[in-house]
Image (cartoon, rainbow, N blue to C red; front, side):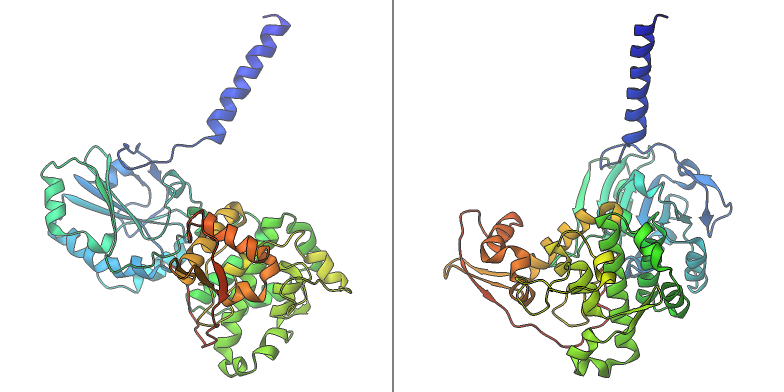
Length: 424
C-alpha cells in the first residue's frame, strides 16, 4: 500500500471511528429495542440479565426515581396490572440512582415486586433519553416500542388489548387536568456529573430534596479547598450548575432550620450563612456576585460594583446569563421550582426552565395589547435586555404572537414561604 493510499485508508478509519463513537441510537416509538444487558438488577432472581430475559409478551419499561412523586404514585397501578396479567406482562423499573438508595426504597415498601435496573452510569437510560420523568414505554413481544403512556393511567383493558395482538402505535397520554405540564427533567439531570464538584452540589441538593441528613455533605462543602473551585470549575456551565445547585440547596436547608429568618428577608439573603471552601458566602454573594457577575442588587441590572473582592472576581462567571433567574429558588411562592442542574446539558435545561416559567407566569391580553410579567423580570430588567429584549424573549418562547408589541407591566411578587417546591 503506497503512502497516499495509506493516508486515505487512515482517514476512512478515523471517519468510521468518529461516526461510531459520537453518534448513538436513541430509541423512539415504533422502533425495535435491541437486547441490552443489565449488569445490576435489584429485587430479582439474578443480579445480571438482559432485556429478552426480563421481558414478557408485553413489557413496560418505566424510567423511575425515588425522588419522583408521580413515579411513586403510579406504582400501585403498575402492581395491580402485574398481578392481573402475571406471566404475560413484565414491568421493569429503570433508575439512574445509586443501588444503595434503591435498595432502601425497595425494603421500605411491602409487596414491592418489580425488578429494578440500577443504571447508575446511565448507559441504558441514554439509549432512550427520557424527555421527562416519569417516562413509561410499552414494548410488544418483538420488543417494538408500541406506546408511551403515563404509568398511572394504563388500564387493564388496554393491556388485554395489547396482549391480544393490537400493534398500532399508541400516542402519549397525560392527565386531562394537567393545565401546566411539569418542567421536564432531561435525561442527564439525574446522572451525576463527571465533575466532582458539580456532583457534590448535586448530591447535596438531592439529599435536601429527599429529606436526608445533610450535615456530612455540608461539611464536605465547607472543607473544599479554594484552589479546587478555581481548577475544577473551569467552564461557564460547570460554574453555573455548581452555584445554582448550592444556592437552591442552602435556601431549603437554612429555611427548614429556621423559618423565622424569612421575616427579615434582607438579612436572610445578605447574611453570610454558607460555609464553602472555608470561606463564608451569602445568598446574595452567589446570586449577584458570582452568577450575575458582580451586579449591584437593586439597580435593575444596569450597574455593576465599582470595587469587587478578589474571591468574587476569581469565582464569578464570565458572562451574565438571564436564564439563571428562572432557575434560582428563593423559598417564596413566586419562585421557580427547584431542579437539579448538570453542566452536560445545562443550556437545554435553562431553556426549558425559562419556557416553563414564562408560559405559566406571563399573562398576555391580546385585546388590551398588554402582557404582565413576573416581578423578577422588572427587578433585573437589564439582564433581559430591557423591555425590547423581553418582547423578543416572549416571542421566542411562544408566549405572544410574532407580530405583537404589547405594553409591559410587572406582577406583584408573592413572598409567602413555600418550601419543597421541587419539580419532578
